[in-house]
Image 1 (spheres, rainbow, N blue to C red):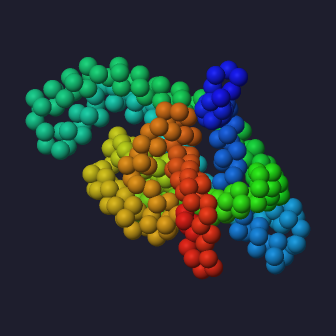
Image 2 (image 1 turned 30 degrees about the horizontal axis):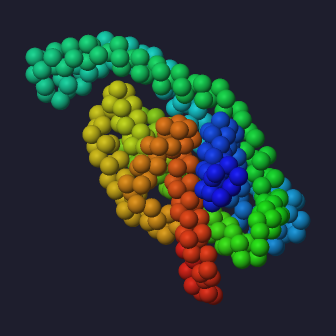
Length: 357
């Protein structure tokens, strides 16, 4: 019993909870900075295998190896930009010029009436639907303007993305020394051994997850681009780029990409928007049940319901950034809890580690 009438164990538990809540509050206050650090960490994991191979076979100095990899990646991106950039820029410019006229036609009901008339709807049904759309047009336009304002606000601050390769350079250069120093200060040898296993599992998990996400995004971009170009879909590369980019946001991203692609083609006058929607649906099934399990392997073994809840919660806490980080955070927390609950288990040689990709 303490001098204030509190049990010592209860006081320690209370203090731990308060410190934990304070850490959560601080993390929420600086969530934008943490997101930038997370992007830098993911970028570092993308380059880490190349840096390690370069250091082993070409240049033994880690900083020089990182610099060489940066130059190679920059050259590859530049070559890709030269090959795809002109077509992509032309499509973006064309879509930007078409959007104002498309918006006017949507608000006037011209596009909706034309689409329904081409599908054989009766004039009375068309008038009823047009009246319903017009009665809610103010709300629709308001939501669209709010979404556009949010996107423009994000783009205005997107210059900080330029700091990602800078932070990634220091992560690649010093992360091993930082990890060793941090774990060495965590207490006695048994506790340090547990945290070393956690660090190894997290290293494998994040490396697998980040590289798998990039591969899935590239596969989606290529598949959509080939299919859209072959089918004569307007703004094919732009829509394929949106589909690939939104692959990084679990659940919500692919759904949003599909809706955007179908909506743009629908309002741009494409003759077969429903076939496009069918292709996107079939591709989603192939991606989720065939490609995704092969690429992700067993590193992200999380129940789909927990993924959905995590994505929604991440969106409420930190918007798009929270959605993007929700799955790796849940997977990392799962690994840490399992290791802390069974610290005495030491995997033998050849035995599969829990949570490893």
